[in-house]
Amino acid sequence: MIADPCKSRIVKGNGELLEAYFRNGFHLEEGLAALKEERLEVASAMEIAEARAAIKDLPPVIREIWSSLSRRVVSRIREPSSPILTKRLLLAENFNYMPNGDILVASRRYNPILKFPEKAASVHEHGEEFYLDGDTVNELMAHAETDVEKAIKSGVLLIPGWKGELTESYFMELPTMYLGGYPLAQFLFGDFARPYGCFLNSLGESRIPVTAVHSNYAKGQEKPFARPLVMGHIDYPELDGDNEDVYNGYYSIHYGNICGIRRIHAGGATNDKTPDN
Image 1: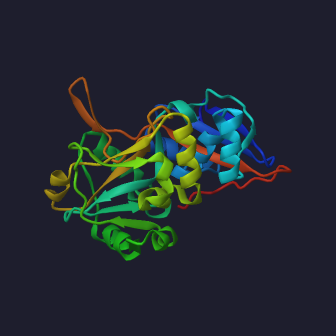
Image 2 (image 1 turned 60 degrees about the vertical axis):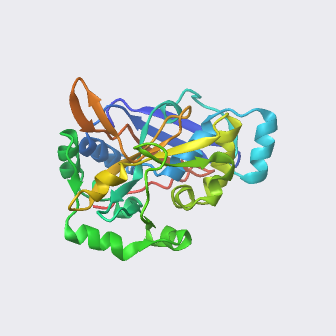
Image 3 (image 1 turned 30 degrees about the vertical axis):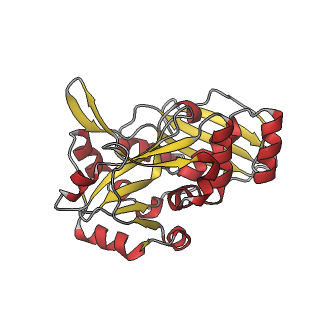
C-alpha cells in the first residue's frame, strides 16, 4: 500500500467518482512500486487536468460556460485543498532530446524514464543525463509523428528543430484560451485541451509556460537523453521538461511529486489499471 497517502475524492456531474492518490517526497522506483500495489499508474497530463478542473470550485457563471464546453463538470467538491492543485506533479509523459535539436514527447507507454526508473533516478539524482540506448531511440523514432492526430495514436509526438527563443529555458508559451489549437497541448491533454485552457483562463492564468533544456545544450550532447515532464501547481501551471535544480550547491534533476488517479464510474465500477511490466 502507499505509505500515508493523501487521497482526494471528487464527485462529477455524471455521478462518476475520481480518487486521486498522492505521495510526497518519493524515490522514483519506490513511488512507482507503491502505485503498482494500488493497481495505479503515474497520472497523465490529461488525467491531472481533468481532476484539477473537477476539484476547483468554479463560480456559477463560469460553470455554465464550462458546461457548454465539456460534460465533465463537477457537481460537488470534496477536499478542495487537494495536493492535486497545490503541488508540482510528475507526468506519465516525458521529453526526449535529440542531438539534432528535435524533441520527442513520449506517452506513458514509451516513456524511457518509466521503463528504466532505477537507472534514470540514479543518474538524475547526481545531476547527470539519462542517455538513451540505441534500442530505446529506435523505438521512439519508429512511433514518432509530427502530425498530432497520428502522434496521439502512435504515442510519440515529434517537435522538430526547436529554439529557446524567450529565455534560455522557455521555448514556448501556450495561450490558455486557444490551448486546443497547439499540437503539444493536443497531444498531452487530448480532447480536454480546450476545456482545460478555458478553466485556467477563468482562474486568471492566460498562458501555460513550457520549459525545456536550452537548445545549444541539447545539440551539444553526443547521445539522446530523457528528462521528466512535470506539471506545475494550479497557480503556475507550467509544463516543465527541464527540472534542473541546485540546492545548497548540490545539482540534480527533480521529478516532482507522484500521483495516480482511479476512475470509479457511477454504480461503483472501477477502471483499475495494472502498469505494464
